[in-house]
Length: 409
Image 1 (spheres, rainbow, N blue to C red):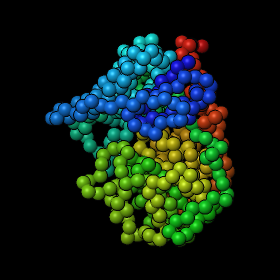
Image 2: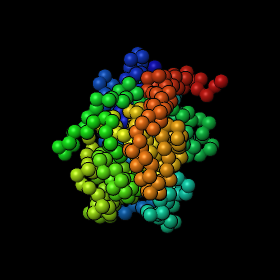
Image 3: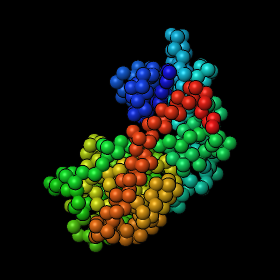
Image 4: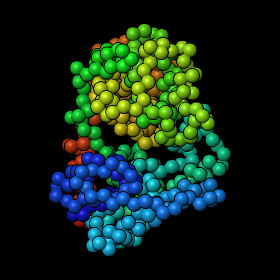
């Protein structure tokens, strides 16, 4: 079977699946603009031939960038076709538009789309947080137009896959019966508790089992509740004078609006509470290597994960797999994974006082929450493990799609 992966920054979400297909003896290739690639996976790189149009209508700008990338990707695909290559399955992340014309290049190929999120002007992430609301009709129009690329993908795909039930539920109803729910997968043998783990920070060595509070995201921003976490910190530190706080994340923006010109969300909300913090106990680690990040989770007595109703971050499942007691936001993506009082604790996203209450309780009585930690780890292994759960289902889906049997009883 010939499988072609398409991702702007390959391997992206395909870093485990592509090698697994190779090990199974399949012909695996990839197309991408960037990314580090993978050993033994031939990569066709393509470059856009032009930039965006000056003075284009603002509502059309995002879609035009995707069309430009789709055009470049299709041109590279045509070169492959002329060389005699035709894939059986194309597995694409459609977020940047590259896949739009690939079914026109290879009509006989099966297109499988990784469907992460379908935007809505109401009811999901947009205007969820009144502090940053933009109810202007122009913003609603922008959000609606943002879906144009994905609608074309939904119309042309043979099948789709979404990582979680929540993400699946954001897709238009007309397409949901052609979308499987399969998580990307966490290697729970790698991401596991380690009682000997340590983290060295600012002249201190923190050990697993000590009073360590952790917060992790790719970037420190409102979409992932950074502002609510910071607002809870002064009271937590006041009531837990021995607690140390490890904060992992960059200064950029992954989701949502940028910070005001010349500032970062990290600094804005640090400034808001800085006078009430003990700087010797609050450690901003920035972006760190994966192994170092895992040790942050392993030394954590309490881990906070907050998010708007949006894509669930891998770090939530990784924290559970590492045996963390997660205090999470009672928002739909987190509620799918964490059941309050069973494998973690949930609080209202906007109630930083309740967040502080729960964190203080966990830091004060670690033995009380040991069964929840074990349950969190069990949830990660039983539902989200890469080798036993996610990879086999992904491989089976691709094989069924190639055989034309997907979706049949």
